[in-house]
Structure formats: structure tokens, C-alpha cells
Image 1 (cartoon, rainbow, N blue to C red):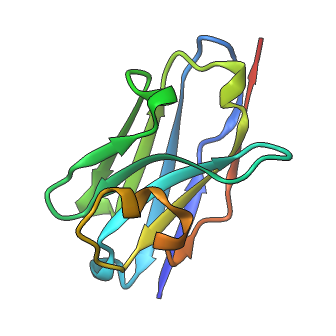
Image 2: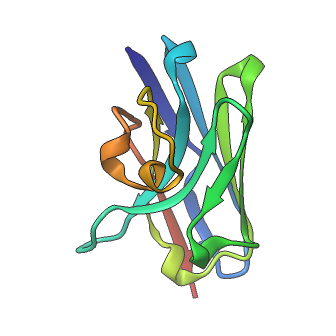
Length: 128
């Protein structure tokens, strides 16, 4: 089992920045990838970014490329999402997720079904 606690959300003006953190505990060595998803009211959960635990490859949805940066600190078992130049359309509940599943393709890790552990979510609100 892996437990995830995501923190760092808040209210920020458009153009501002936030850094989300996801602290993992438990059988963290079994994780193959970790990711951030977000869900706005009335919308489906959307992939934001993922990082492979082995090799460190990263992936982003087009709408956040150049603005968001995913990273990890292996020693602290923590993943981060640095969000810059925030826009009102970034408003959502952000969830961190961890996968213990092995797949050969990056596409797999952009889907919620790839992840078997989830954080409780942290609200990000960007005002215009």
C-alpha cells in the first residue's frame, strides 16, 4: 500500500504561482510513476503531468507546457508540481496519484486507470 498526501493549494491571482507537494509513504519503492490530475466542477478528471520513477521522464498536457514543472525528491519520497503563470482555467481540485503498474507506453500513464493510489486532493483557485 502507498499513502499519498497532497498539499499546497490555495487562492492566487492570474499570473501568480503555486507549488503543490505530494508526500508518499508506505511501499513507495513499488511505484513506477506518479502524476498530477485535476478536476474542475462538472468536468472529468484531467491528466496534468506525470513523472517516471525510473529514469525521470516527464509528460505534460499541452495546456500546461512551459508553465508547470513536475519534479521529485527521492530522498523525501515527495513529488512536486511548480505552477507558474496560472490562469483562471487552471482552477480545479488537484490530485496526486501513484502507479505500481508497468506499461511500455507514456500514453498509459496519462489515464486515471493507470493509477492505483490517490491523494485526497487540494483546491487550486485562480482569480481573474
